[in-house]
Image 1 (cartoon, each protein chain N blue to C red):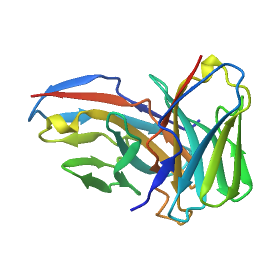
Image 2 (cartoon, rainbow over the protein chains, first blue to last red):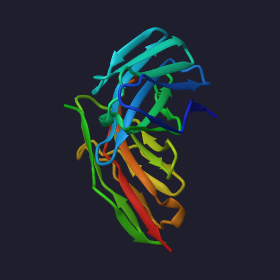
Image 3 (spheres, rainbow over the protein chains, first blue to last red):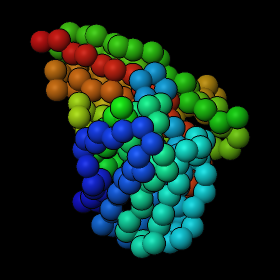
Image 4 (cartoon, each protein chain N blue to C red):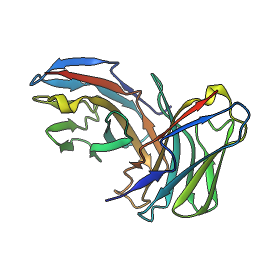
Length: 114
Length: 111
């Protein structure tokens, strides 16, 4: 079974802090994704990566950056946390092969910025 | 542009009732279609998928048929259980790097 793990289930941070969210997958997937999930808005893509050191902006990249130094690990960084970044953050990974592009999700990190 | 629209919830049903959650999509090509389910406190799990027109995806008693003519992928189950209470997301993807998710439909099943 594919396993995607996220470093924390719950985080509480203060405005202005730098926040790191870590995601690790164990299936050698090329693609990794960061989404945020907000009520009524569904999932919105922040960034994705299709290879080590490669990244592309999603729909809402402002205020975020990412790092992918190893294939299995994809980090989301909030450079200076703000209250409007309070949300559920979901990491996902997928294979690149045709027909195997199903995304597998981690359990999510619920972030509260005070 | 590409998008997914699904019916707003919450949907409240009694156990053993018939379930339909509507989903329609807009896409520039011929995407693969997915239903994901999110149980309380968990991430999303793939429920079923269909990769081409007229394909039917099925899993755990749920099914959905890829209807190209109506650009729809409605989720159905003949008899829901309390354990089906969750949020259901419809999604499509036609390349490997971009998924489009609907806003989610919360299902509450009462005993």
